[in-house]
Length: 103
Image (cartoon, rainbow, N blue to C red; front, side):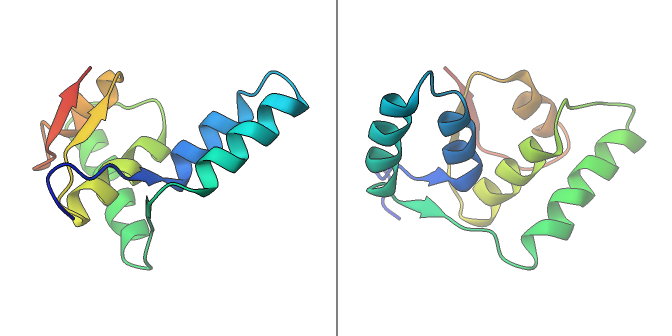
């Protein structure tokens, strides 16, 4: 992926669609998201994401959702900078080499 490429995760797709206000908005958003590029989970991604959560707990740090650990692991695996508005990713970056920037 080039430096200017933007990719999403399926978790982002899930979170955006579930926040739709009505059927029309859901359909429009679904159509738009179908045209986007995604990084996908592999069998290895799942245990690595669980390990992030486990290591955070052992370090007495918490994140609100294991989904954030999955998103972080995808960014690490694909060498992406994660743009976010969520302090959980800053917490994850304290124990992993996660390239992240708060917007």
